[in-house]
Image (tube, rainbow, N blue to C red):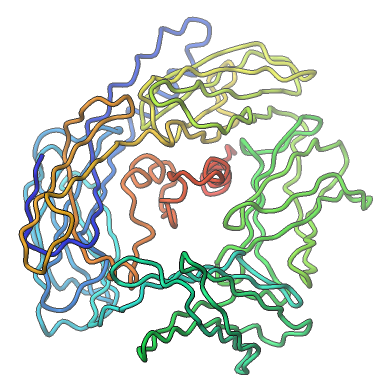
Length: 537
């Protein structure tokens, strides 16, 4: 595939949707058909349509064109046939200012909006509504701006701080042409509650990176703090700011028993999510105590205020969480009461990524307070893919394995059923996290002048190295635009394979969960255990 563009290329990104491999057929089920029938009835009644919109960039000037493309899937594969799709541009007040109706073929529709020169700036919403009811919306920003000459990032190393804590942040500086701003002197200013707290002079290393570190006072009145890094490059002064999240006493703590409920006498796992009063994630550490004051578990969050701990609840005991970090938080959070009877479902802790081609089975450990026949059923992208049944007791874990198709990718919905088909526990387990496409882009020249013609050769292969046909969209954009309005919620795989199991939720910074960071598998498990939590009543 060759793509020609007469615009000066600075950065490019590619999003692709390819036909998903047909999932393996479920073998006939003789011992306990009620569970499979129950799931099949649910799947037959669901619409199971999901949509993703791609735009060429997240930030536009008045007078520019918004190029967009949308895909619709039905039960995890591209929708078939033709239907209408209506695109709307909604202004910050909620009024539709532009509308186009186009024909979608094979679930795909594309077009553009030309922004009038007099368009008022602000955050707009681009949304699409397909004739069969599927819809999606994403935010874009319209603004007049001047591209910076220095690309800057400023990242705090923790999600929140308390009085007396040490704050650390990394600064990364690059010239607009890409090379690091090495061995360069910068200034860091820290304001707290309207007063200057610190003024630090730092120097970047050879990679253009510097560490900002400072201590907060032991007594803080309001906690309104801003960190500003100022860069002076040959008389050109630019800056970047980040709010320092400071807790002065209150945290929102949510506790999610794996599978839905804790059960007395059975090993269980509890996922935690901590946020401040504005809803932003907070890194915390704490202990779990019973009603006698004895400490029975300890934990600390690992990513975006999320963590987990193990617990075997005892009969006639109540449990609560007390935080040991950040300092000064004295709230106590009660755990949900354990059920006296029931079953506990836990994923076997196997966070390693799948092999490039073959997918590991999903394994879960099951215990019940009474011996009984149980069935686990796996659903992937609204298709029944596997099931297993066994006699479950209370004295030891019964590990049940769900075979996965080799090409499987997505959040697997694992449901535990009783013999009569009644569901009692459920959780999500992700498979194929790194099974993406390999995209190679080769330019016809190493450098270009403004207005030069650019020819790109694109090669796409699957995880096994085989060429892939599919529907592709490429965006070519000056990467300084992304430094103004980097869209950290747009990710095709997250939208179609992950958020589909989390209705009404948008995953922030989804690129992290599908990247190569060593923490990514654990972070994805914590996301599934919190945002993907479910419970049967």
